[in-house]
Length: 165
Image (cartoon, rainbow, N blue to C red; front, top):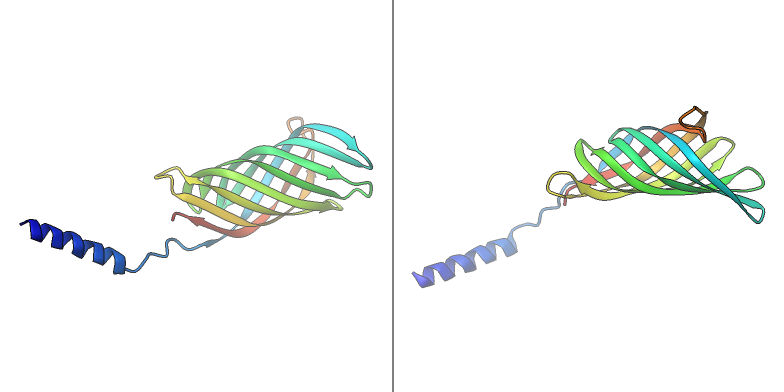
């Protein structure tokens, strides 16, 4: 009996060692739209530039379907162009799976046109499987409102995401 158990364990170990490794879920295309609200801006001068720190709530629709809450730092140059970077927490859906994680982006703004790269890293709500994504987005300034005194913006995003191991 003892030998049978040992043989079964050895057989199972050999099977696991030679079984093909799963490639896991593939990356899928990510695309959609977004809009955001900027508020609570604090500006300071830094040489010829103005540095603005601002709070943002951003809504995503499409492959990313949820909300980002974070802050952004803009460096506005004398010619009116700007470099910006932001980070915060995304909660919602990623390719149809509930998830949350860190969303970061950085980009440039010229003549009311914005372009940025983004990265999302986090976990799913179920089983805490990893979530990862990256891509680009473009956008424009849409005006202001009482709630979004420092700007309303909207645009589109594209890239790819992977949910799971």
